[in-house]
Length: 408
Image (cartoon, rainbow, N blue to C red):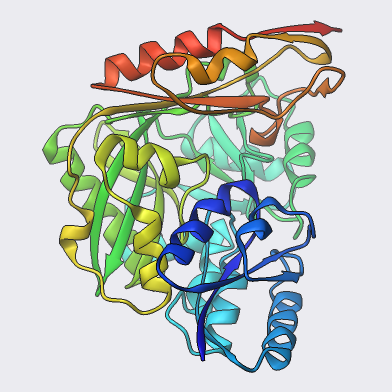
């Protein structure tokens, strides 16, 4: 029987996982609601189902393998796709390595996640679920301003708002709620300090973190109250002691969620009293962090590790030891709101020094919306360099070289 890896999602950011799995001699079956999803080009089979509907996906997967009896399901995974329940449901049904459904439920609900951290004494922000805007005031009286309000099931910064006493709280509550499928929101105390993205692998209850990136919020004032990230920079400006403390924190957070094995993506704040968790995700990162930035900066291949874990191949701690330390950075395009009349400089990006990947999400004639969430960004550039400084210089030069003319 052919060994088959199921990859949940067939978008452009999932392509690297398909390539890695094929290179390992696996057959790959992808799932996506879009029959024209780009990663299907690299697949041996395609299942059309919503990645966010775990029941629909499981039924479709069962039907597929009933019709393809010569194939054996060996593993299931995802990348850049926040669908832990879908991955866990398929893994549980076919008795595959992967996230337990109890842990997936926690990973799918930011309030339950915070509850698990609190129960185990893992350092995080103060938090509370709120059912009306009046309860935001109660939280502020207890913790002080500013606060962050977000959907418990949010992704891609949708509905994440930084609010203070000057904010129209009724509007903020309704705005955040509008992004929630389950119609639940929560508030958190705002943790001040540098924000760090991490990518880790849990092996037998131990955490191995090869990748730390400084999250760039330099344009926060421009988009407030929406909390929009403008990329990341590696290596992060951290001491070895801070790296060890963050790794230990991610480990404790993962264990609190019941995760002893598998990928864990972390959003961390380095406060004056040490690191604290904003949230963890049980998957490989999007934004080309796992596929491009981490290999460029460290030489560690987290995608290969995730594929090996999914199909039950052994992993060793040394698989997550950086081979070198180079600079890598990603920045995003933010044209003014309006109809894009002309774009200059985009074709020249690939020939600019250090530019390793770039993409525009808008074309001439498209409308650039108000930036309220990460999907509203208009594209990105990834650049590398011998060190952090050179990568930053290159990525900023590339971003500045593209000119958007917009009709307002």
